[in-house]
Length: 455
Image 1: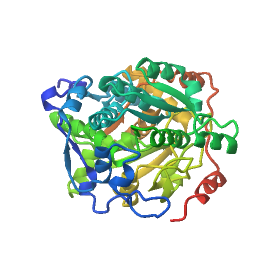
Image 2: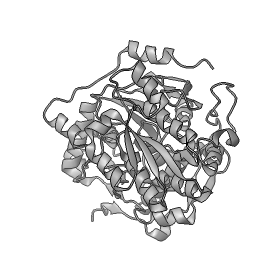
Image 3: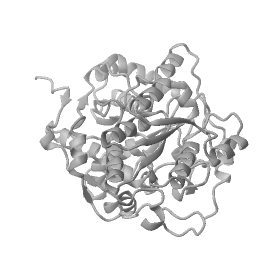
Image 4: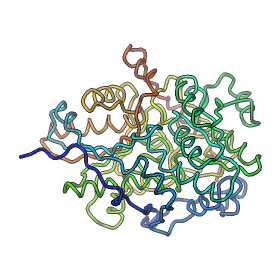
């Protein structure tokens, strides 16, 4: 029997033209964003000083099942989409597993990640509104790169606050963000009130996404004509990333396949939310559905060791409160953590689905095991994966090895949402044996959770 094609492609004409809003099918909707002072749900009008108007509406829309992708965004997508679905034959062979392993590869653009899907949408709406510029944060740099690309395409100024340890570890990310015309500042910085306050409280800190968010929001809300945009966590972002799952489902249907297991890394939720969306729709509609696994770093374990509660989305406490799995907004991961996914909380959508048992499992993995899996994947599939996505690779390999033990030929799907070519210092650290696993103590976790706002 001839081997099935390794790469499964859609044509441009087959590319989805609508985003899928999973909230429309959720019986229990994600808890609303609330005002930190009044604890009342936020309105579009209250959110407009932070986000552009159309994105505010998308953020609060729990009912519209499908939202049209604007034609201008569709045309931009066609530069790098549809993305391929790939059968990992060589990895399967190396593992000696009867499992079938598929991955959706989102690295076919200069940012090397899926982040461009939401960046394009957010910048388009900002441009359409007539805004003068945008601010954002970035951790590993994928979101900052993607947003710089989208801002260049739509001619929109951008200021990026990058987590300081990543800024120092990944100078080439800084360079490429600047290549696309954006300004980039290591966070926490002395350029904002909140940055100075964080540095005073935590001298010498290497930063976190929570810190960088605080600075970006402060600048956006204090600069006329500017707004803030975010690359993960928010409902609107998971909406835009649903194109990944919509494509993946069509591609699996083309080869008469359906996944038994769907795996995504989980830092803020955009990766997992994107790949699972269309398959989660099946579960919510009462149809046959996969087993969903969220994979997070053991060094920043919001789902596996955190609590489900309202918390600030940032360290400086300038954002609304979101109900999510969290280890506390003031938690700052160790600078030795090189695998990305450094956020203290989890998407409200992902959090609600996990609390309701619709996401079946959350699993935390150590970074040395993540890079072990990344190296095997690179050697077999010839793609150097991003550390973030390699968390999903780790668990896909583990599940495939379970199939080897049981003899079950399960079909596994995971999301490879980035390439690791700007992460070579981390790969070098793993190769020379200097990489260490950092796992916060119970006291570390308790300390972060103890500082949650009383709601």
